[in-house]
Image (cartoon, rainbow, N blue to C red; front, top):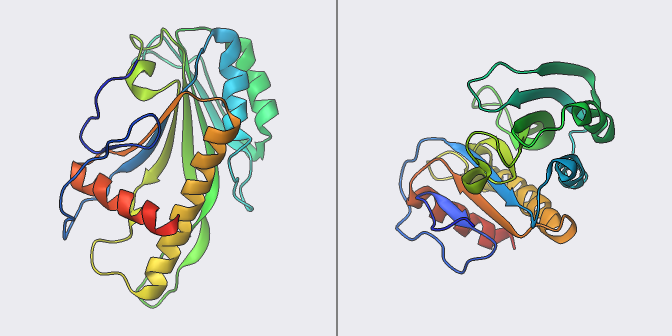
Length: 225
């Protein structure tokens, strides 16, 4: 059972409480992550439950599938037992079949894929454009890294920097805000699909930041719902 709400974490399931505080004028970019818990997560359930989440994921049109798999035994400091890159990306079922040969409750599995988000151009004169952005999904065995799943989730989705969903920290132009809100809508749709279809018992969407950043994300989420 995960208890408490660490700073910067937004409980979006299983809790009525959210961080409070005034919105900042400036905030450094941090990673945005989604932790997921299931009612059970035995070694034989790890791949099917991971696959159920990946089936909800909106893969990039230009870089679909699983592009990388790494399998870590016991703890993050140990050498990997497998690392493979896939070009083109593999269908999730094919990637699961490879990982299924290394099923252990003290292993973690790192999957890399991409989805399409609206991103700013390289210069001020360039408009926002849809581009593939890397996402990592981490499957934690129950005994990996001294039961890391208790805080990090049975599955953790790393969406990359939160600026794709919060925008830059100056006042956003209407067009820019619309693109950021479109990214947030994609995020909301994915997390909603996971909750509806994957049998999870809890989810926490959070940022490696203070409570003010989480509060800003709460407001953006409310504005697109």
